[in-house]
Image 1: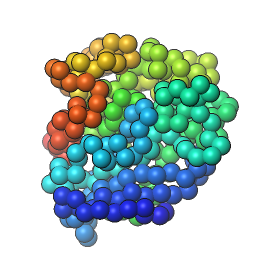
Image 2: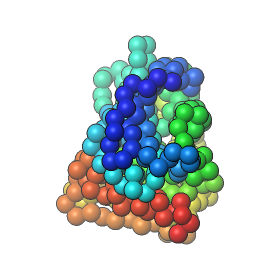
Image 3: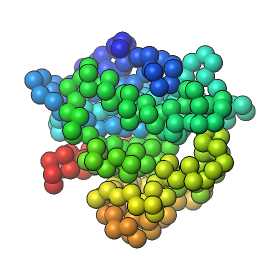
Image 4: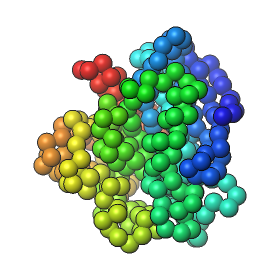
Length: 280
């Protein structure tokens, strides 16, 4: 692993790192913030999964998480959203919602994407081992959050690994990709036409199939231009009600899909995660 940069901020250190991934067969870049009081101790870790078109840099530069993480003693980890590099297949039409920057946190099974697009295994298997090797992460105290496509990833990964993640939250997540245009494009291209294979990458379907976590926190802006067509939080609310999952769904009046929205409520989410690390 190579440290590309490290900067002091809010009583901690912001790292940007690069390594050669065995899962994606590419170099991958990720960001890690470590509070100072990690010295001599292992700290809980919050994973943040970003949305369409993003890299690790979007939340690192605009997410405004470091002050709260330093106060609460939380490591904050932000992976990339897809493999990148020469030879990595992209959307043939160059669209923003598939291919580079749009890995959808799945392990692709269909060509030409199967070799490189293994973001599910990268985020759940490879990168946690690497982070724990180089940073003071307490592997027994992890949580996960994300935005939009990354909110989809956080929900599906959290629901699929309820014993690993002590808290799961999301900003404006794609809750049911099997039922919206973004998913109708990405899931068959990555996973094929068998809709049964899509279900473990659809939070609503996972809950319908029995996946369970005690609680979820979701913030959604009412002025989000993707709200009605792509996000549909009401589907998650209905699924959680039927399954007995304690969903806190907060509709935030006047907020859109941007990092102005995310940064406004980032502190709330981190404190909610910290409470669950503490067993509250």
